[in-house]
Length: 298
Image (cartoon, one colour):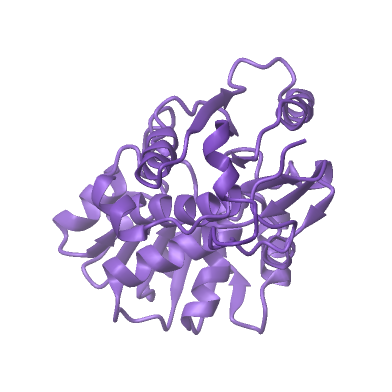
């Protein structure tokens, strides 16, 4: 199999003198996204435009398993298909970020700590899972909500995206992170994986938790195309909250619209999408994606 960039260290090359990146112009770099109901994804445009700007030929394909009769079996089959097909790597999205992990040969330290994978890189016949979502969320948060209070934050969702946003919040200095998820065991597992004693599972109803909170994070797919609605009742929002959403299509979700109407500071999921894609691009190609250029074109 053709390899791009340096082997499994997760560090992109600079394209000078290592004999890996320069050769990428000789044949297309194959990448893609595995998920369910992903036709609204902007990932193909983001990756292909950045590649073109760097003089690379890159094809990014949507591998939508939305009609699969057995999605887990199809996930494994799709991974083997792209590995055998010479892909440099694939992104992985809802609902496979945690379910893909046992199918891989290795995990980066960050993916292991977060307990979720959104980027798989193929090198020398081996698959390595990475997590670029946490980096992407942190970068977007700093751009849109820099300076907000982080004393008490409520996060709805403890799945793959929630694991990444929770880790980002810990690294950003959140003092108390309350995790809300209909699957109590999943929320407890996430809390156990996070460093320190910052996080806890919600012990009261959502109204009581939000009444004392500085911020709210939606780390569920609720609000995106195909999953309409709001993750919390609009009546529970209050002007003292900041609200961040991981959803980016649509860019303004019903949650953000309701929060903005109350005067809340808000952060859409677009920046997270851009910066996680940029880091994935680094891993796929061995080149460093131009973050500003990708953000300007989003």
